[in-house]
Length: 146
Length: 109
Image 1 (cartoon, rainbow over the protein chains, first blue to last red):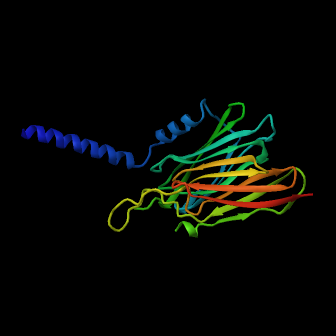
Image 2: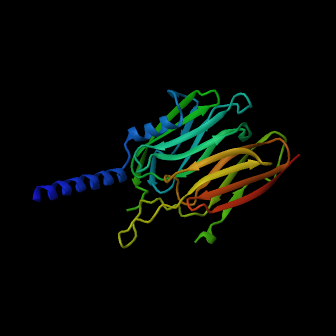
Image 3: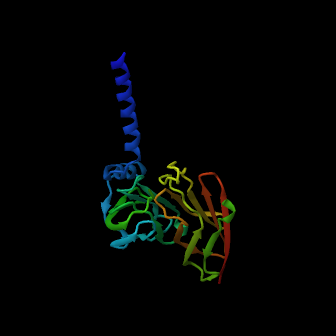
């Protein structure tokens, strides 16, 4: 009987640690998995620019600019931009879906970064071609609360 | 709290035909990311603005899906190509299905 209780306790502990693990920081693999689930294919380097501070003192609001070279015409435009952070508790940051009406595939936003980590951007063109860029940002104070 | 949430816009009111104009938006929203704990150690549930839709004369321009990694008071800037006079419409939605809209008229000469 005792051994059974212990087994149950061990099992509960295992479940608890699994739950804790889910809340822990994401791994670069999770960020890549999320990006791969958004857009099928192998992204190439190029066309995408990510402007971000090299060192962000406050991880609560890090300004970034993402732009993609494209004429944004009816026949050739950026369909979507996916942004992921590989060291945050949740890797997805934001998804932008464009139509040619946007005129220019450039966006600015402020992101939360939990620690020094890499931002990865994937751009999907209307013909399915993917481009990517990534960049490490050093964070002095993380932005995910305690 | 929901009543305090206000969208703010900075959009040019006039433009030339075919001009690509820059649009800046901000919505005052705490973007509670579901990671923080209150004084009693309880996790504060996630409540974020998770979507922004932008249309021009009811034609879609941009859909943004936001996740927890977007900073509080989400600021978004982007571009719109204007071929004729019209109205830009912005709609934000949060996890509790609250939504806020804002409109801005653009005169195209």
